[in-house]
Length: 330
Image 1 (cartoon, one colour):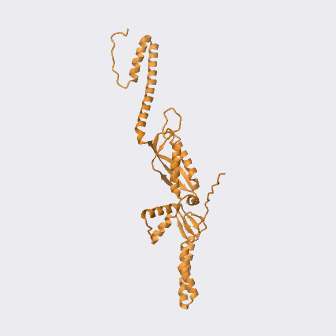
Image 2 (spheres, helix red, strand yellow):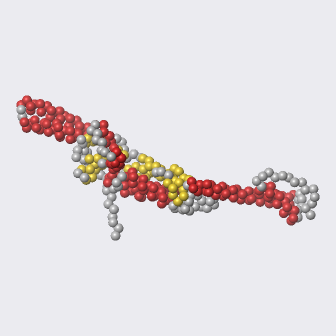
Image 3 (cartoon, one colour):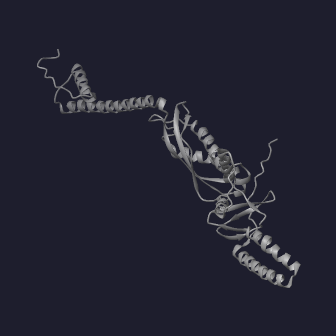
């Protein structure tokens, strides 16, 4: 029995107007400061404790729930390990201060930087904190992914080098964050896999006269199928593939010279066929005109000699040298 795959759906996070909360909290903190000064004068221990609690703990904690988003940015929020919701759209918002934003791409880069440095560098400045918050945002912009050139065998087994560029964007932030470990790496791996599967279905090129699809002659159809194949693989990660294009296509270096010779030979043969067809038509036309005009009466042997001479002149690759025959062919 096939196991059903559970796909997480995106939901909107509960939020309030950030500017209203900012002004209200600032006024409350100012009022708590005034109340603290008054309580010190009248020596009220309870009022002093409440004022200090708001000034030192509750007020700054409420500020932690303020979030600013630019166009095409989103926060994926979790609350005590559970998915709380996604905050989208430009604006100034206030969410539950206990919520934390998560971005697997940033966390993966952070872990790799720690491993490369061999130590954890702590930065307590406000600039580093703002930079960290910025990196925790999920970008909803249209982005490009360009993989390195790969060496893949085509349908005929010839090794070719091919490179593609994929235009994509995040459409479901919940799946992008929670369904896969790192959605950018996941896209890269699935792109390479789909590229290999598609390239093996087509030859690099087809000879003239054969109505078959090839990587070189049907690049638009191949790109469309490549886009569909990648979309199926990354759908669970909440990504949308907008376009896939082939940016580089060539034979591998080890067979490039041989394939070039084959293409040259094929071109020479095709050119010779056209020359022979044209020369045959011209000789036939010349014999018909001579017979119609009765310029000269030729027997079969003279016709054969004339055809031979005309074919040599018309099909030869070098300039012909005229020879005057003063005798007879008999």
